[in-house]
Amino acid sequence: MFLTYILKVSLLTAAFVLLYNLLLRRDTSYGKNRRTLLLSLVLSYILPLCVITVHRPVPEPMTETTSANYSRTGTEAYDAHTNANPENTEALTSEENNLWNVTVLCIYLTGIVIIVSSRLLSVRKVIKIIKDGKMSGKGPDYTVIISPVITMPFNWMKYIVIPETIKGEQLKEDSSPETSWKRAVISHEISHARHHHSREMLITDFLSVFQWFNPAVWVLRRNLSDIHEFQADADVLDSGYDLVRYQQHLFDSVVKRKKTSVTTGFGESSLKARMIMMSLPHSKTRHLIKYIYVPLLTVVSICLMSNVEYDRTRAADINGWHEGYSFSIINNVAVLTGYDKSMAGILGTIPETVEHEGKKYTVRVIGPAALSGTGIRNLVIPEGITEISAQAFAWSGNLENVNIPSTVSVIGTKAFDKCVNLKYVYLNDGPKSLPDGIFLDCRNLESVRLPSTLENIGDGAFSDCRNLKEITFPRKLRRIGNEAFFRCVRLTSIQLPKRLKYIGDGAFYGCRSLEPVNTGRLRATIGNKVFYSEK
Image (cartoon, rainbow, N blue to C red; front, side, top):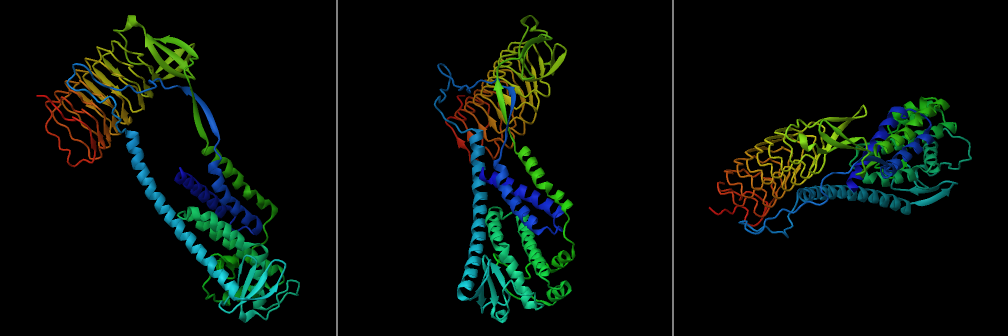
């Protein structure tokens, strides 16, 4: 959750920085630009927390509220562990995700420690320089410190630290403008102190440390540092210093000092950029329209991060019939709920839409036991169906072929229970889990195509599919449930994927034709009597 939040913060920061550099980089409203950059950084942290919840109505899932535990008792050859607590796909996936998240979090925290340590060392160095120096004077916004260990002046908080080589200069702000280059340098530092530039850098450093991996935050920091230099240069020129002379001194000056990263000072920004900004006229009032990107991006980000909650209800708005099928309209979505028993043997393909009073509704859900016992032989479920509820086609004795589209994301327990003549099943890529007992007692089932996206096969999913001869497991499969292939007596060979994490109790119990399975290379948890067979 925290890493997701930081990722959102980083993306917002990148968006704000990109728009700033496109619209305001050459704007001379330095005070507004400083506030805009700081506001952008603060908003990047606040906006992901401002989630507006939008409620949208959809039908309640028609599957059973609790997953049926599959077990066998009495005369069966094997007594399943009814109290077993097997791992499931979600838990396994969660465990892998947690491991990945912990690794990323450790790297992230290491970066924070390194950056914070670097900043603290810089602050410690600055404080030491100030303590070792000698106070020379005070102004309304600054205190002057003379230091013997630096070669160029800098500003940190209320302190202006200057080398001994310039200590004889007049520092009072109310003195007449001087043409001295040293006087200009000191005026430059006074401007930094007056505008509290170093405080802004500390705030920026504190906020940006949490997204140290984001290049955009370093660009923002550089943009803010540039603005500080531009503003200090502008103040020096406004005090009466000659523009050409000032620029010439900048060209002639060679900065050879080691500068700590938490201070502001002369020569930090790009010389070329400073020259350009000095020559630009003051931005006009109409340029304020450029700042509109801040509220616009704020609104867009809130909209994109809005949370959609689905209000689920079983209350039907409309009940009706369509070509032998009964249906309900729930929040403008059609749910098939049953069929005309007198037409059981002649029903055809499941409709994609149903019509009521001249209006068409898309069928999305096949309800619990809705089409149980129908006479459909070749079942092609139309694209657009998203849910097949529990026992939806159970006891459909004529059913021979089933094609389940990729749009189906939810399948209920025992959806095709006791379809005794079912022979061929094709599951398109999409579903990640097959529920408990989905093809239970489909005794003539011969061939099943499993989706490549499949990660979980539920308890008893193919139990008593006695004509199933072969099955190919997808590479992503993580779990095979209890008694998943119980008494599949004609199953001859299987290839277990390397990523498999769990094989449930009696998963292949009674598969007497099954060749020996090599599980030595697996790291999976293997249950009791998985491959037991009484021949």
